Image 1 (cartoon, chains in turn orange, purple):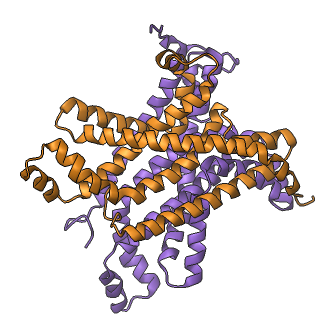
Image 2 (cartoon, one colour; image 1 turned 60 degrees about the horizontal axis):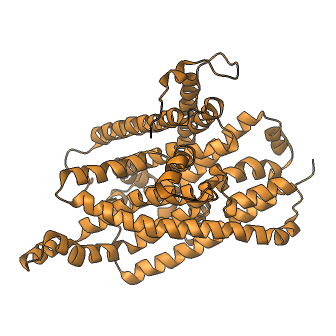
Image 3 (cartoon, helix red, strand yellow; image 1 turned 180 degrees about the horizontal axis):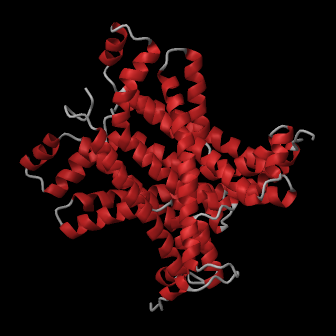
Length: 234
Length: 246
């Protein structure tokens, strides 16, 4: 049997298609990062609030999303929720439901993970900070928003960015709903042209380089911020 | 929105003519999920522990090799790794080995690829947990072992690892939860695990809500059991004079 003969020369002509996929990958990453972060802060505030129902809701939300695989969440939003989404958001019939459901699924899913990270950050802020805020006459909410949360967020920046790198990798799971992200396009083009091996390896190499560079940047930032995130319990 | 639930669909015989019900499909999927997760976990635990120890040994080359190992498995998305193991590796393996894998029935080669993929992916994460566990031990433990005349191997075997292992139960429990959740990606290369079986059920019955709830309940059940067992192990190995092993 002959060893496998690579046809790397096919890659350049596939680049325009791949770059369209990359666009989707980045779109999902950025939207889910921003929406997930905002929702995550809200969830954390709910979880730490004195209102029992709000705290219970936030707790149940985080537990539920962490118990189910992301792939299942994506499928769920795609299979189960399209009609619901269409009626709720008044989307025109021409909207690509896969894109919308992926954006929503990723945002909601990431929110649960960001909430846990932010909560760990808040727990790492010394209690005295909150007490000092209250002693100065701030309300508990003011103390949280102006004193505790900024310090907590600063402390967890590296963790939030690491989670963002994981999110960037996880966007490739939209393969299961047939949305054309970078990986899905690579895989489809490979299947179409009989160059699956080359395209999958190429995609893997691209992710590897991108994530290695991003991790290195995060690590440098981590050192520069000089915060001890290792001692936090997640 | 009104939706007419139809739970009886689970006890209906499947449309493919197999002698089973849709509940049987889900049960078979649950079994496959547990099977590949457990098999992958054994691979992950053995390789991950070994690599984790290597990462704490002195020596620049050992460190560079183990760090590269972790980086490769961490920086490539899991689904891409699944595709590489399933589609690319059999082509690249030399001679007979590649041919043998290509001649396996697709369900078997997909299961094999899944176990290898999940096992190695998780081993990189276990490696980092083991390393963190060993490095968290006070330096005095290491010094105490050596000063008692133990060799480096014996210090690891009788002092460092037994203490670190106790502290590793909670992080390893959560890695085991991750491998179970990650096994859902095996559905993309054709393994009929829980997620794939439910998708198949949707295709044949178009009862998406019921099928979807079945997967959620399945994963929630597994999560519950794993967390329960993890806590029991944690409690039974805890040292009486303090949980941090100092």
